[in-house]
Image (cartoon, rainbow, N blue to C red; front, side):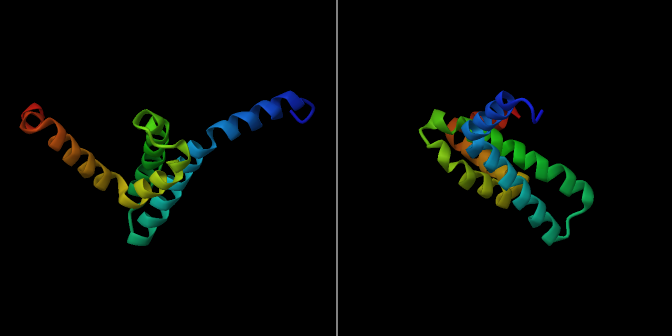
Length: 109
């Protein structure tokens, strides 16, 4: 691969274009990993929650332009997701959905 400069240029361009989202995912992963280790989490929880939060941060960072937020804010939201954790993020999302949809949402579950 060192003899193919086009491949390196393509990879560099791809990373540069998607860097905020990748950085957000990596930041969420690392913060969740260290937070769980600090709290004394078990290996199984660390191995599942940290990658899950990294993937959630990637998803959120790709949806940010749809709600009018600059993609350069993706690392902030990735760090926040990593700090809040899966359960906290789920509770926040459920609270927002219940407020938006109302009592109908609880009867659907």
